[in-house]
Length: 266
Image (cartoon, rainbow, N blue to C red; front, side, top):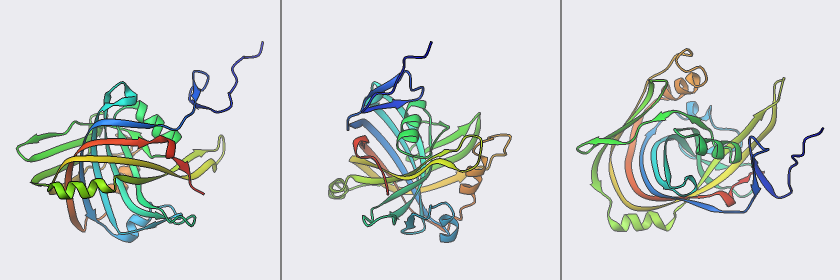
């Protein structure tokens, strides 16, 4: 006898598709408690361009390494997750919109649910890692990411001055960030892709408090034995030249993901 499962018009599915279909509607999800640490550094333009698809223009040779801890995540039953993201500022040049935003080179997250949603549906380059909670001794804040007990990146932030209320208000006047991605599915049994497309995934953040400071990022290259699937990515990032650290910041507030506004870019 043939199976009775069939796809329904207007539904969105997550694999395994025979369990996880529901009617799609545009929605926004709130991450009610966000702590973020961002460390920026200037790097060699030619080296960074090797990781930027040709549909994008690099706005400046600056890399932003961001740690974020999200709590009270609405769609996860007010659960939590953490990430470390490495991104560069870009402009999409594939059409006349000329949208500007950030292109994440990689996003490490410590929970399956946000990885699957952001990766399959929105083209964000999400992969798994154990991302430690932020800790601090005095004004020295730090975190790290590891795989199977092998730490490959550490972040340090020395907190200095608190941001003025007027500065916070100015940041909240433009809360939207255009996050670009690349959704890719390889062909089965041969080279090439069955799906390869640029994507847009807008996100918003409302800042309550913030601090400036100094930051540093420390990479440890892993062998293919230590991390079979990501050792090349880690080595590539570790070998990006740090010409000068150009600022660091710690922010507290909440975030909103505009899932209904995500789309494929022509």
